[in-house]
Amino acid sequence: MSPARKRRRWVIAIDGPAGVGKSTVGHLVAKSLGYRFINTGEMYRALTWKVLEENIDFRAAGKVARLAKRLKWEFRPTEEGTTLKTTLDGEAVTVHIRDERVSRNSSLVAGIPEVRRFLRKLQRDLGRDGGIVMEGRDITTNVFADAEVKVYLDASIEERALRRYRQLKASGHEGSLDRIQEGILSRDRMDLERKINPLRQTEDSVFIDSTRLSLREVAQRILECVRERRRGLSR
Ligand code: DC
Image 1 (cartoon, helix red, strand yellow):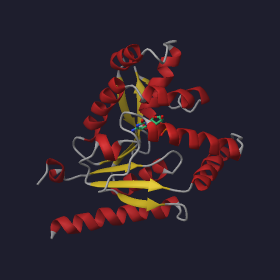
Image 2 (tube, rainbow, N blue to C red; image 1 turned 90 degrees about the vertical axis):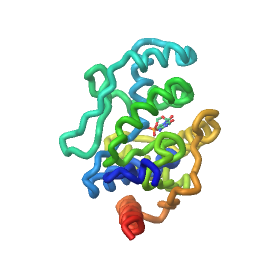
Image 3 (tube, helix red, strand yellow; image 1 turned 120 degrees about the vertical axis):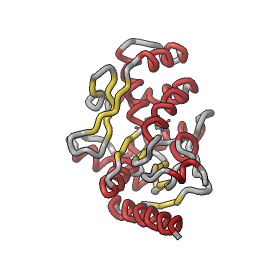
Image 4 (cartoon, helix red, strand yellow; image 1 turned 180 degrees about the horizontal axis):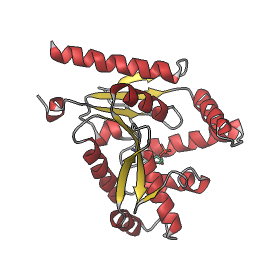
């Protein structure tokens, strides 16, 4: 039996391209299981924000990595208790990390191997005792390749753009559907072509195409997989 199988509370890893609903689904699954949820993209975004704040050149990989190691990283549950939010040196980053400049530059930070190694260690520590749903582009392939349940979520580009458009509108932001679609396609390209830990679907991941499913239905499917795995293991 692998060490991962010995965890009583599991790690559920969710991978997939930008705008596919990983966070909404991950949160629903975690809430239903009484687990914690974390969106690892927020960590890359948080560091990107700090790099901008400190006027560090994104090409200075060593400086960016040193900054990452100098900061105090903490992950605190929100009031509702499911989601863990990143704080840096005691400051919550949520209000800073959806900024356009952060979005545009986060793939540069995510392409620095030393930064990836450092954040991977923080992410592994968060899931060491299980009881967590973790989402992000490399969680099933790299960070928790040994997760008990691995899911690869996908949806058509049109549907992903439409979801992002509605999400922005609901939060009071205007955006053009074409530009959102362009942005998602360009992030897809960068994530797929990244030299280190590119976006990939592993053979042992459950593939779910959510184009014609609501995110609630997707969460239900994942919960069914969890139940099936548990039944399989207890036989
Ligand atoms: O999912 P997101 O757009 O918030 O992610 C922000 C950036 O971080 C994006 O460039 C993808 C990258 N990322 C990553 O490389 N690995 C992860 N586990 C999560 C995000």
